[in-house]
Image (cartoon, rainbow, N blue to C red; front, side, top):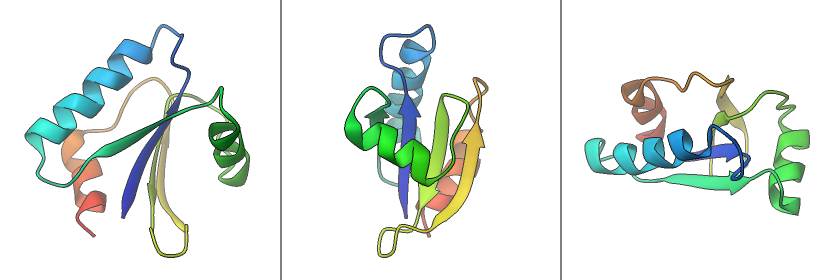
Length: 89
């Protein structure tokens, strides 16, 4: 499972998202979170593909076939333990 956060790096929530990703890697032995800017082609394409409309958005994606398993959208980030449960799959 791959965990991705789609966000705008030059926004008011950027620092919170980046800190969340760092804290997740330190606290949860479940791998890392990939930060993807919505200002890149990859980020914009991913937002369209998974119908993401609110940011930041945390996505749990199956690596092998890119199926979206869970999506959290909005400024309130999910509990790290909940994200970790998907990361371990």
